[in-house]
Length: 259
Image 1 (cartoon, one colour):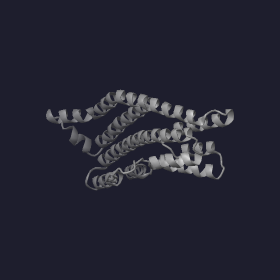
Image 2 (spheres, one colour):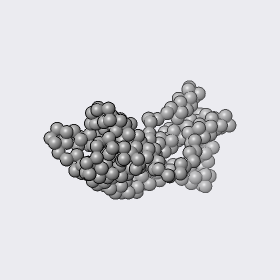
Image 3 (cartoon, one colour):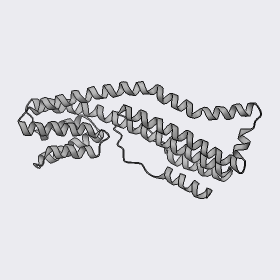
Image 4 (tube, helix red, strand yellow):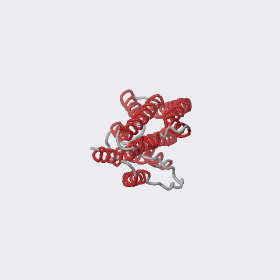
């Protein structure tokens, strides 16, 4: 039973998450990527060999929670980077369309000014326009691989509105760019306001460790009880699971507010 629980925790830790795109601006040096997940797995496996099984299971739960939090932070950073690149691309796109450039040329020029997933999506839309395909469908297809799909859906709606009613596409693209700027500014303000709530949740999740330390200072020996065979180990697992569940829940709530 204990071996199965440990195997399940490690399997969840190893499981790959959904694909995410990290935008790198042109000319920006690529940072050294540290393989955090393999390090966590190695640490948990080593702990399972030299420590009680309950401690290993609790460590796997904590490692899994920390890895999920790290992926969410990376996803938020990727979304912010993509939104910033999309703002720049739309600025160039609107300028090219205003001077009468063909959509193919406008999208190619905008793609050349940015990098990452935004540039790839712009080039895909340009290729569709060059072959006479629907630009709206290309913009909606770009939303499927984007960290900010709502922005691409708005662009598709603007382009469809221009095609249906004969409106100036350059004006609509400029309006969409200003809308993205306003939304990102609001999201940044909300994220800054949620920083205190995230810090409070992290402190509350760490309070049990403070209680264990105080227990050791007064001679209650909680560490010895929690690492002993029997009930202590499973209380350690239950405590770690509840603390991590509360931390993950608070992070999910604050993340939804930011969105």
